[in-house]
Length: 340
Ligand SMILES: C[S@@+](CC[C@H](N)C(=O)[O-])C[C@H]1O[C@@H](n2cnc3c(N)ncnc32)[C@H](O)[C@@H]1O
Image (cartoon, rainbow, N blue to C red; front, side, top):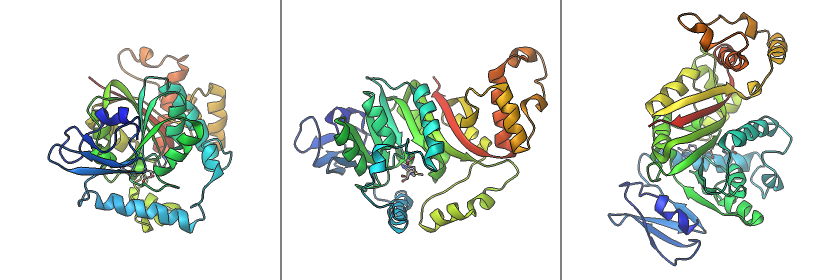
């Protein structure tokens, strides 16, 4: 981890500042971070382990073991050259993740000076793109593994000649100073939280006022489908059988958790509808066999014309995207801003 990140870190037990016990330099490779009451958190091989090994951590430790075992059992536990290309590797599921990440980069506008935390970073492929754009970048995950956990981010950064600070920590007890981040980025992380409301409260606290949560690749299930039914789908059930925490939120679950975290929703949308034109919406609706944008109810009430004029393409995109989530479900990009 980079020494310059130390002032941003907090003791996960007390919330107090941390001091370094070990050799100081530009990077901290081996040593310990020490909290106010003497609690010690090791830094090993450049990875800081900032969690309390208690009952709250137990499901995270189980999930961490589960991911490593799943990668082993499915042949993915390798020094994968594709890690250097991610997300632009051109095969499923990355062919659907890459366009979402491109949209995320456009919205987050990473540049030198921004402090960005990739939460649930996995191997840190996304953190790598932020670091390459000059951001002070943290990669946080419960998995420390050098091939499939945050340890991998150090290899990616070394390859690029950039700097990433990897932390093994729980997003539901995020050891980050309040108001210190410009962007929290997540790829397919929110639906792995055991407590989404707590995770987002931690995100909200760590962001500065106006700071952004940019989450991609988050599943939303249709309103009429029960979560238990969605969790029984084979791929999801397999992850659960490895001890990986899985949830399948409805649109309103995300909204409720954002509101409770002091995060103002800017937009929750199916990535395919970003900048989509009216004609393409109609064609896609026909292919899906769902109501098209022209069939949506018009806004009613005072000043309704202001809320969505017929020419308001963006309003139609939003309304149609919401209709898709509620009726068919889908994969969402979630953008929210820390409120004052
Ligand atoms: C589906 S994976 C996505 C990994 C990576 N973002 C990617 O797109 O390749 C979800 C990741 O979230 C991590 N995760 C789950 N719960 C977490 C938590 N409470 N705090 C931090 N990371 C968590 C998991 O360990 C896992 O690496």
